[in-house]
Every structure is written in C-alpha cells, then in structure tokens.
Picture: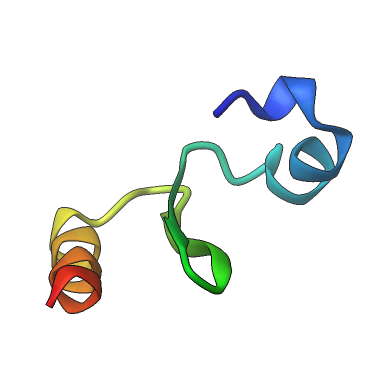
Length: 50
C-alpha cells in the first residue's frame, strides 16, 4: 500500500511510517506503527488466523 497515493492515509500516517496493517472482514486494522514490534505483529496475526 502506498500512502502517498491516498490523501487520507498520508494525513493519518505520515509521521508514523512504517505502519503494519491487515485487511479484515471489518476493514483495515492497524497492528503497529512507528517502531514496529515483531512480537506484537506476530501475536495479532496469530489471533486473526486462529
């Protein structure tokens, strides 16, 4: 996803790059941003996939 092609994403995330997000049935869910945590991302992905 390129935030520079979407004004809303750029407005929301330009100071928090990088952003880890996933597409769920409810929409896009932020998992982590800024200094990414491998453990936080792993735990959330495991919750999502069951």
